[in-house]
Length: 300
Length: 300
Image (cartoon, rainbow over all chains, first blue to last red; front, side, top):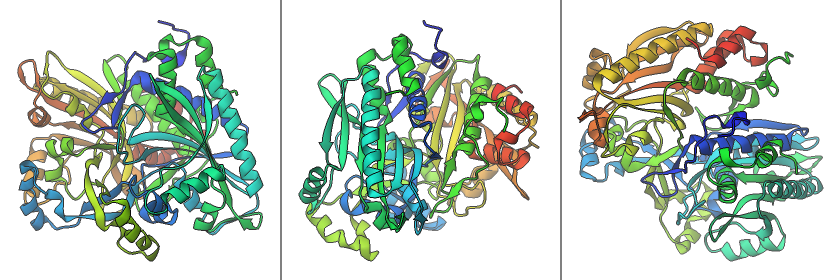
């Protein structure tokens, strides 16, 4: 055991623990050590720019997600939060159904909350009605949820996302996206990861699906950083996104007098950890010292 | 600004940011600094005992929560996760309802997941069918959810909970609960908090409510550590709980040949932070050095 790295005292070779639910895992100490190193690295990457840090809870106002346009285009991925709408007397009748495996949930009604689909959404809500006189930057982390239909490695339904988000003018946001795409590519490469950058699209749903995807690709709005996360399995572990004025329109904010544009650099934390484990082994105690240092220093 | 304490570099005087949803807040860097100090302190408290650390996601298999008995007794607090069960063509008809404020969610169906009500539940599921030859200990943290009906300070619907859980014999679990109750009382007192310990009960629901509450109180199963968190507002910021063989029965595990018992020491992380902010001010940069040291050293 190397004693040299203080962050690793509790780490062991230990993979995520499956649960009864596909795509939902528990994460042991050694895995959290990797997540902690990555957090430190992203914070180091972001140092020197005025990011406002916000920790984001895993649920969000349904109204915010409706307003953001997410419901319309990704209904198949959204988790809505429902709760019991009946009284105590009615529950006396439903309760026995729990043991019988019956429909005890027949009185559940949709609530004002949904599960958070991406870490950045609450940020846009904080900007409603604002006339910004320059760019704003946010460093956010959240547990996110997507009702994925399959569950291979890295295809998680609940996962942690860190995002470096900006609101600014169109030119500012385009530069920001390109700047972060290059920096993170450089950082991942220094970590020994084999990165491919690809223009990508989001998993739209419904009648407009193909049109949306084609438009997103043609405008080169989304770039994914794709890396091997398991044998014969390459996944996007991060993405750099330019949203144009989508959120400025939806949430009614301006920057320097025009409808606000936004961009974000998003990290899928478990996937980055899987990629590092695939490359360097499951036990961070055994990783080369220069890799550990490079994760934390966040240099590209 | 004091430069002496390395954990405080990013902290500012900054309160949680409200969102459109009652009981759901975003947490700024200074608040997260306090949460981070508390995590360090609890880890220090737990050092020297063989706790298995697990990071727990904010959703859990519905079957696990049904089996745990939570659905029967706390249906009013449970958040169930629903998702779209229709096809793309049907969505073409529902989608326009999003902008109109109509029932776009009429095809949502209950899923295999619910929101996690407490951090410890996944632990019991990992013990199913096991015959343990001695106590087991788990140090878990999760975002938890409860559909609270009111939303005063500290009455959060989404919040972070750290738990130190054990499975063992009846005697072992009773001693464990009493040991932790005393230690945490000592720790909180050193932090300058004015702690009262009270026998408590859980917010049961339905016809059996009063009977359950009376039985829980009479057996002194739950002790709360109550502390002022705002002007004229005292809340439980932590609790020490003995569950007897409830989870051993429900999840079918034994310890030393008898049905397993369990106990846990649970910390409501935001509430502990609110109590500290109420006592020492909202900016941890300005807290006395001995208080900061006492948070992190975890001594009772």
